[in-house]
Length: 112
Ligand code: FES
Image 1 (cartoon, rainbow, N blue to C red):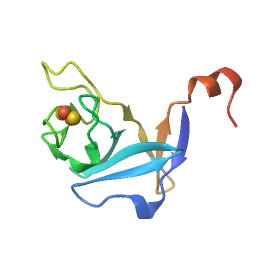
Image 2 (image 1 turned 90 degrees about the vertical axis):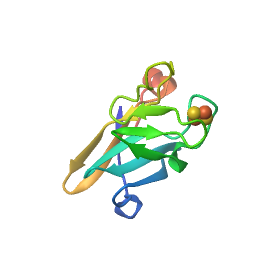
Image 3 (image 1 turned 90 degrees about the horizontal axis):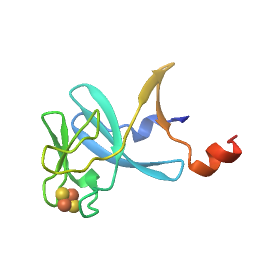
């Protein structure tokens, strides 16, 4: 895993889902219930852009067919049989960082 600082101007304000690009990867950065969450940005059902969805009861809801995913675990609601990636966030020196997994090739050959 590698940690990346998120520029402060990219942080969404209250109750907003924003798609940002970190290290070439699209991520949904979500601000809700006084907390930030980070998830994948593509719905596993049919590829909708999850940043166009909304949050309800601790879940991210897809705008196309309303599959819903837990903001912390990424697990889809019962019966959906799918999930989205979630990524850890951490505050360090008043800056928000996101942890992204290394690609298999970087794990194999090392990353700088
Ligand atoms: S594309 Fe997301 S629920 Fe169908």
